[in-house]
Structures are given as structure tokens and as C-alpha cells.
Image 1: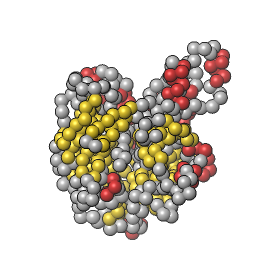
Image 2: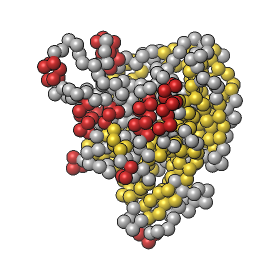
Image 3: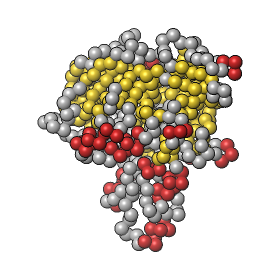
Length: 465
């Protein structure tokens, strides 16, 4: 974890490893002891072939390596990944406090690292689970805000609503979900996790998580919605073309529609290309040379009409005047969604999107801030007006920024009145890492705080007032 602390006109920097079981065991045993997303655990040299064989039948060992994100629950803060384990940390000194197994509290096998947080502190997240009739499903779970009696909100975690799975034994990979003021939006892509391969990840032959992915363009994308309160699944079959995605940008309601924007990739093959290129991360020249394999990335807007009946068959159900997105009911009762493309550029993706979350989450909005990925390498910060499709860019040579975090100017009313915070890695510079502060209106630089070390390019983070 990395921390930049602002106070009294000064900036201090701190970093510490999160002392998870995966970390402690790796340091103690001097090997990767638990299989990670892209790394197979090395065998224990102290065990012979027979003891290793029988150890595979003692249960699946899932990593608690919380390297993806950090977010608040009640008055506490947790480092998280995409498994069932989250780790409580001290935001002041970055000490590791305790490990929490969500499977022991609520019916989920894992949750995303991208929850939604209401203005009162309520946390919503999604995870796959075993549903009715021993079939796979996806549960939206709710963690209440800080409790008056000082009890742990996690202990009151509950399932709000359940989404069915399109396939009985192959859940989709879920990285994020959408939430408006009154609805949840879940995009079930054709990027699947083969459970037989997943269980085989701990077999004698050895497999990593990324080997368990598979996809089928012919299956298309299933889009599910549910009411937030009370939790109620809306059984209308919304469908769209096959795509891959990591991050939702925002969702909001307008005149009987749900509008939601996301970063998408044409075809689920991008998962394999992304992971394959990620394995070359120590050789950027090789990454750029081979990035021609990457599919064309886009920012898309989908619109879901809520009032759907059989009488509407064959006509566009979207009546909003400001979008070209369509929704047409087919003869079989499915509603086919065609998106509006908000941003598209050859071999340059907009990913890791952020908005003025406090003001606009679940509401109509105008601006998104993100990383521009050139050949999968994050080398610029992009601001996008989702209404006019205008964009702004901040970029410096040989510099690789992290996800831009928006911080609103106190008491401001303009959506883009604030600053962006990003940790930039510049390996060729004398001071190789710095926090850059940009004016969110035009991406002009306000200041930077330099650190005389090289840090990894980070995934996600947050601003703590």
C-alpha cells in the first residue's frame, strides 16, 4: 500500500506490504506458496512427491493477496482483492490489522474489488455463489454503515438480491457492476471461469487462475437489472453483442430508462490478450510490438427501457432524445440492446474510469476521468465529456500515471470543480515517482510531490479526507 499525506503545506510518503497470509508465507518459505492470478505456487521442497500428492486433497487454498483496491466499511478501511478474503488496515500507519473471510458471514465465494458506497456509508458489492437448485448465481450483498453501538458492520452483511447465471457450471468473470439510485445493473459477459479447470488449479499438473478463463463469442452478453429496495430481480431478458469489460463508469435513471456507461472491449478475446501481454510487463518493447493483437477498445452507453411489453415488439423502446442507443424486443421476448459509442480510438483504451463520485454516483453526470492505455501501457490521463464526446489529455514522455482520483473543491457546485490525484512512475527521471495534482477542469498541472524511489504502477486507490 502507498500513502501520500497532505498537511500544513507538506506532502509525506509511506508504503508498506499488506501482511496477508500469502505474503507472510512467501517470505517465510521463500517461495510463492499460494497460487495467484498469474503465478503457479512453487512446490514445497521439504515435501516428497507422495506428501505433495495427498496435500492436494486437503482443500482449495485461495489467496488473500489484497493487492487491488482499498475502501471504507463503517469507520474502518480494508485492502481487497477478488476472492472471499478482505484485510483490515490502519490508514494512518498502513499496519495490517486482521483478515476477514466473507464466506463465513454471507453466501458468496468471492466479491469484486469495486463496491459501490452510498452517501450514508452503506456498501454494496457483488459476488458469485451457489444459488437455488445447486446452480451458480450472483449475489448483491449489503454492508450497513457505521453502527451507533460501535459493532462491526461486516457482521450485519446480508444478501439483497440474486441474479441467475446464464450457464449452470461456468460463472462469468465479474470485475464491477452498475448502480443507479434505485437499481442494480449486472453485465454478464461470455468470459467464463471453467470450474473444472479452476479446481484443477491445485492439481498435480498445476494451473494458475488465468488458465481457467474461456470465452465464446456466440453466446453474447446478458444484462440483468434488479430493484435495490426492496431487492427484486426483474426477469426481462436484455441481451447485447459479445464483449469484454472490466469497469463500469456510472449508471442513472431518466424517464423510465436506466442509462449506464462502461469501458468495453470488442470480443472477450481481450482477456487472453491482456493477460498474455501482462506477462511481458518486464519488456515494454515486446509488449508494444505484440500489442497489435489487442482488440479495439471503446466507451459505450447502453440504455435499458423499464416499461417493456409484448406489444412493443420490433420498435425502438428508447425514447431519450440525447442518445443513439437502442433497445428492440425480438420475437422470442428478448430485448436486444445496441449501444452508443462515446469514445473510440484505435489501440488506445480508456480504462480505470473515475467520476465525481460524491456528487454524481447513480445520477446524471457529464465528466469521466481515466487512464489512456496505449498498447496496454497507461501513459496518459484522459478527461471525457460523455455528452459532447470532447476529451482532454495530460501526458509526459516516459511517464506512467495511476488511476486518477477526483477530489471535489469544498462546497463547489460545478461537477468538475476539483483536482485529480495520480501517482506517476517515470523510470528515466532522477526522482522516479511523484504524485501529480491536476486541475480537473483542463488537466493543467497544479503541483507535484516527488519521491526518490521507483514504485510499481498501481491499480486502484481512494482519497481519505
